[in-house]
Length: 358
Image 1 (spheres, rainbow, N blue to C red):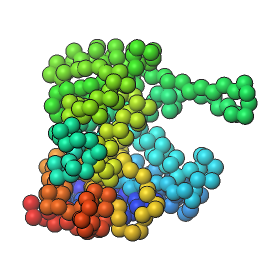
Image 2 (image 1 turned 45 degrees about the horizontal axis):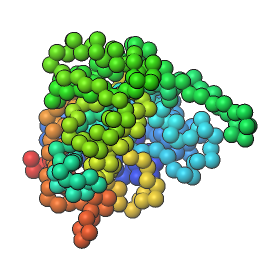
Image 3 (image 1 turned 30 degrees about the vertical axis):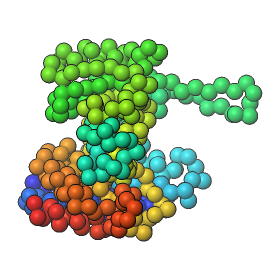
Image 4 (image 1 turned 90 degrees about the vertical axis):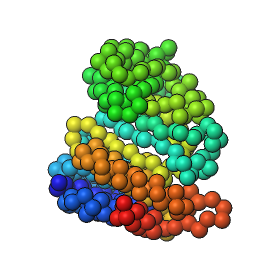
């Protein structure tokens, strides 16, 4: 197999964690006989400094022609004062639009060696292994809106939550198929007791369920769903929801693992898939070797799984991460009192060594 990977280090800790992930991907490629070509490109603040825009056309072209995109992180407070349309974060929205990415997949897994790092009791968080499927390009974030001046005593602002049946069906297809490949349970999160868009969503879920007879379907209102994520996260297999609910619930679920530095994500759709850790650019620790590269490395595993259809390669990476954590190696964010943390580069090298030894 030969594949081209567009690589966007981005800002802050982005280049460090992407560098570690690239080493891991190269180790897997060597072991499995793959040929990978990495094409670096700029986005976010780095692109803003170099080209005056957060997402240059050159980057878009490279990403469109690649088999997959690996992204570190974008953003830094030093660019907070630039005009809103030129903020580094616009690069992410722009890539999603240009690549036709409408489904965000976030696996939430509590690693057994790290169960004590979760803020939840071990008896609650043990066995947690779920996948959140979030609609990415519709809903209230992209609906009609009206801004208002808060100094105006008669000001009125609004944001419209709107979904069409085709938008709902395509994200549900992703979620149903994911449930078929996992434990066969799908939980749909909505607010159908209040929102018309949620009632349409729920009705389409029920209509589609007949086509996926092996999948157990349940509905939860978003308030109950958010509570259940804390009370018993292990009850969930695949959770599917709209853009705004997914944004909130996926971050809530991430906390159960003990560190957002551990968690990957994939954004999929009609074009090239985009893979990135869920955390930000953490400029306060950039260049210090303190960043946890595991979220990015596991994003690379998802890249092998979803874009390159190389399941064995994905499992090889995931098993290597498990072995390194079981051996007691920790970056600063997951270290307990008395632990000597390893650096970003050291963690990457340990995972590379585990892959070579497998």
